[in-house]
Length: 389
Image 1 (tube, rainbow, N blue to C red):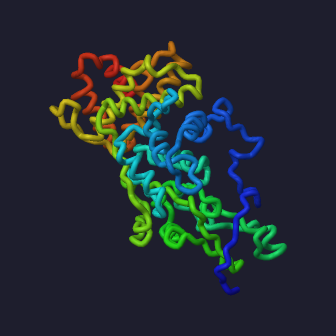
Image 2 (cartoon, rainbow, N blue to C red):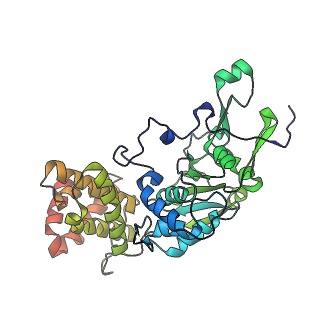
């Protein structure tokens, strides 16, 4: 069948391709959903920004670039509305990411595990397009159809290739509707599937050879991809594909205070949805978790006096959030509701000791050489020794 340049449109209502969270029977309120999408959880803030945003907006953007950056970084609007920070880090990083999306160049968020790549990606899509659900989750088994399109095989066998039988991917829908698509863990996708994006990003076109048609991206379309630069055994991006992205590297938090702030905010958000105790009562334990993680991944204590060995795990901010959240759950259901050293000890052990042989030795040396010597950490030392026995 010859391929023509005849453009076609994608009807998101066909073949059940509309996002699941937009169905009438799907709960979208924060009270109903365990983990609401960003555009639902922060709908009030997004609406307040849109109401007071008088700056120029790129085609089909819900907010101006300035308002998108304010949504991510936080601030106070002229009417007194407080916008909570979604990302704690250098302002310039957010500004570069937002301005990239305002051009025709795709955005690649790169960083070690736990640097909020997925979190930033979701909130960028929510602020720009009002919909963060046009998502392709990258894995070793991600097929080409997840990026291009698939087929309703019952209709395909019955009637042959047709528009009714075509099932658009999230990327195809974003192209047709002028929205932001997301590809998570791009480097986990096989190299030949990754390269499916080259034509989409360079020509802004997705051919459909079976129909002799193509989908042409309309203004407003762009793509955010995330990639982990530390995991081994993943697929490097080809030079041709990497050139289609503007890469923004998300760093680890610069200071203990910044990381404590990030962990506290996220644990508080998660805790509210799970009816867990308030974070402020456990801020000292959060600081301990963050200090332990920073010292072990940095290879030196906070005062710079003692060198320590680093375990095999990444000990990311995301893992610190998980350890504290689990500790709060223990405190709520099996304690007095106050986060204590015993509630976080087991979680830290599980995060640090990934290799039962090598990591356990590193952890024991850290306990004896560092934790034991801190007078105000005696309860933490005893709790860690107890779970490590």
